[in-house]
Image 1: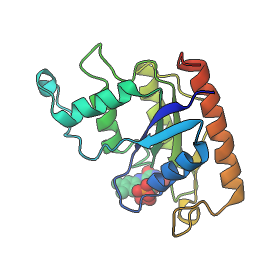
Image 2: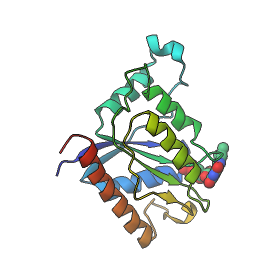
Image 3: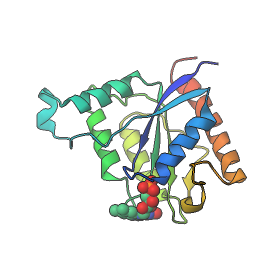
Image 4: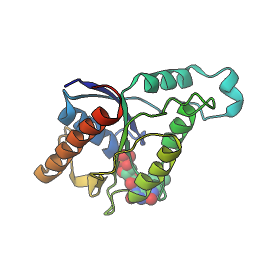
Amino acid sequence: MASYDVAALVGSLRKDSFNRKMALALAKLAAPALALEIVEIGDQPLYNQDADANPPPPWVRLRNRIKAADAVLFVTPEYNRSVPGVLKNAIDIGSRPYGQSAWNKKPAAIVSVSPGAIGAFGANHHLRQSLVFLNMPAMQQPEAYIGGAASLFDGDGNLTNDSTRQFLDGFVKAFTAWIAANSGKA
Ligand SMILES: Cc1cc2nc3c(=O)[nH]c(=O)nc-3n(C[C@H](O)[C@H](O)[C@H](O)COP(=O)(O)O)c2cc1C
């Protein structure tokens, strides 16, 4: 089977982010079927439609990186029951100029991670609302609302819990099949 190039966007800029740890753990679990790379979004100037005529270099880099990817994985916390601004900003940048969205038709999956009990469900589903408009086939099952994040990782970022590892292993296998079915690349 082909190895798919997956752009992973992490919705937290925090140095010790649980979501970043999750993205890195998923990259380990998913290799070699998925070559999962975190695409940094912390350097992106706030989206301003006036700048589309002469876009800042970080916007161009982000748009080109997404266009080159076979699929996109969003790994995000929930801020105030919604998508963190840094991630929404990246989504808006990638969606423009009008008619040239980098997201169009890219297979996607979402993992939401929170120290709280409901696993950032609100962010996960607000994000799905944008993906519908962006025409991204978003994997429906398994859903991944990961709660209790503070006890998921050891000091080196390894997953400490077998049942979480097994769940995530199933998640990446399903995502690989989802990409095969929706990317047009066998
Ligand atoms: C501005 C802000 C809003 C937050 N809102 C929520 C929330 O709505 N739901 C939730 O589960 N956690 C919320 N949290 C707590 C985050 O889940 C927690 O800070 C988490 O560690 C962030 O993810 P990270 O570890 O990847 O940075 C919020 C945190 C911040 C800073």
